[in-house]
Length: 379
Ligand code: ZN
Image (cartoon, rainbow, N blue to C red; front, top):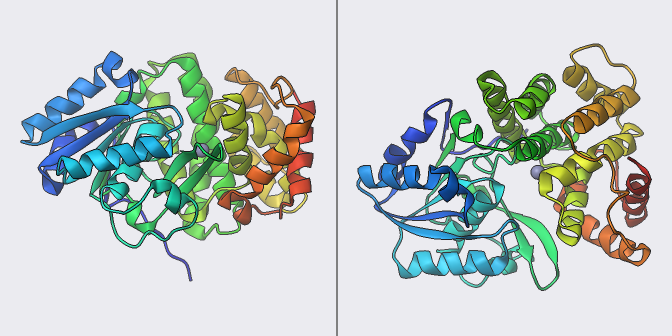
């Protein structure tokens, strides 16, 4: 037996953004509009969201304080604001950080305490405010999932909190919005999507529906990420990458992830590496590690990525390395200023991630250190 959950509705395609007003007006009258500090203003996307909400008759209060790794205190502040201002709906707009923060804020508008309590294990016992998430990148898929990645500032630990209550009531994935991403962001978010799909396919909780979605995403990324990075106006490549992000999200929202994500959070937080870049740097090493346990499945990832018969898992690793390099991301972590004495802490934080528990090959602290050591020699 297995179960499969998704947002209430997913609007996908060119012009899907225009559905924001309709969807929001079905769910509330007073929205808290959650976004980052500047990107959405510069691109004009924030202005369009505000117009769409106003035309649909909603009042929208702006909360534009989300940082690149949303902290517990930011989310708690947003939740308090939503409560004090009697908002009945939260709209997230942007990449992974604003959408994750919007999810946390919608929850904390209703829950007591701090989101950090829930990160540390307190049970989420009720739904939050209804949530609409609008994606402007193609990778994180936070519009699709039920997880909020939060920075616990006190412990310097980034981790995901999730609840079946936390799926958006409506998710909007419009490739048009992703055409504004510069090449480096296109590359980083695309490698995040590839990692989601590969880790979902290899997860011990993978099911036939999640496998089908994950493989579709990998094939789309293999044929389109280079083109989307090379020419941001390539509409075919942009649409394919938005679809890949969405399908990978549908898969991993139900299967969980794996060791790459467990490693990427501590490495990202401690050395200031963007999430998607950290995933791209570490994915080849982790595929090598997992190949010892599930060689055929690692080979299958390469088969769809490269669009040809792949029998050796090493060919998958090489195919991923060439894609990572082609889109301008460094392989491995040799260039990061990692001090030997920080390694035990990094390994401990890796093991603290729930993603480790569904990795196809079991991971001890020593294993995590060995993978990190390999990654320090790679590149
Ligand atoms: Zn990710």
